[in-house]
Length: 190
Image (tube, rainbow, N blue to C red; front, side, top):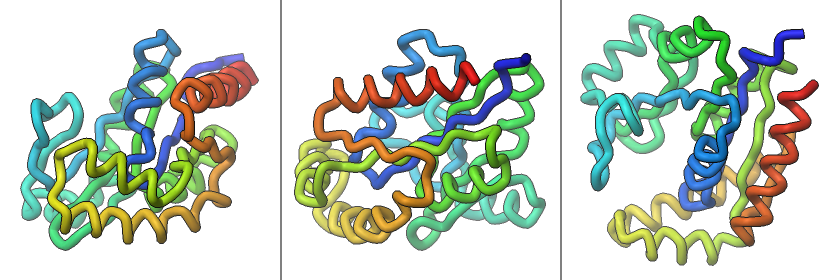
């Protein structure tokens, strides 16, 4: 049986540790390829086009939406879009690789609906909203206003947790990684 070509979807509120967990799994040598999302937001820090994201202007993003180029997309904040390009999924699938998605909660639910049992959806949950606020503040990448927006969004996103195959509470990174690895191993070895 072909064990490749499965989809692993990671979703979480901003600051829950989703990207840290995904990066740790990629570094551990799991047979996975990262699906690079597109966004209309500006790069942060040392982020590079085609590595962390495909950075598009809001106009280009809207044009690509109209061309039906996205598997899923969402306008997270006004003129700040995130989405998964169909071409990215096709690029990885053509190699027979398992795909890892690091997507917002709505995108995660939508991809799971499209692919059903071929996809494993994991929701990384922060231990509390207060801990989430601390993590976002300690990151030092967002203004107080942006953090307040992220917290308000996170409170809504937490309601989606039951729509995922597995919820992993990231109160301790090592434990969250172990739980994620166990879920991945079970799914990939089916």
